Length: 229
Image 1 (tube, rainbow, N blue to C red):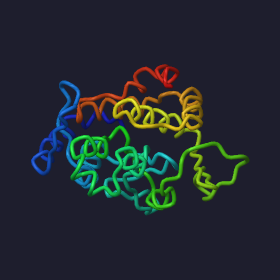
Image 2: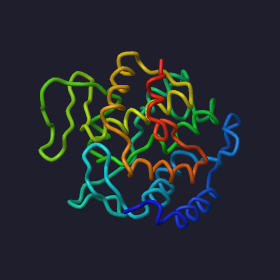
Image 3: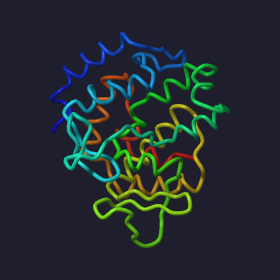
Image 4: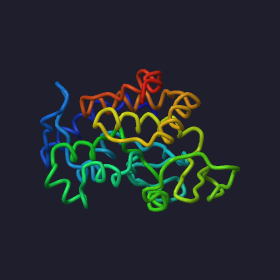
């Protein structure tokens, strides 16, 4: 279902959510709307404004409904593609609470940025647990109905998710000046080329821009990934 069809309802829900807890980043781009805390995003904005009619999970492609359950009853949750643990390390924080208090504006905005958040089967959110992305030999699916593999701290998502992962990671690096390992960066550049932007990803970018006031330029112009250093 096209995300464009629920644009008016999405904006209305977002404006209502903004009355709860809002923070405005002093370094935000001109014209960018305030961003709620991640807890508020995870509780309502992400689900009601962006996935108000349900959708599909990133890693497995499971369809889910408005109750945040897949068609076969699996719980779906929000997953940071660029891991929160990496954000904390980059900001020299020991915990989310410390970062929220000490570096509140920058950290809160990056933590709540929906360009970096995708719906994922809850089991995989727990299993990922800070693993980096990479390429693994062979095909050793960990679940019969989901093409995802991991070993030795590396996780390899299905081919149809790899471009999304790459463009989200590049967005976080450029927007918030976050580090990316050179070897991982080379893999992500390749994934960006091999898995082109889909119509669904374009519509998601449009929807998030309508909510946050900022687009992911790597979706608009995927060739920008070739300039990443």
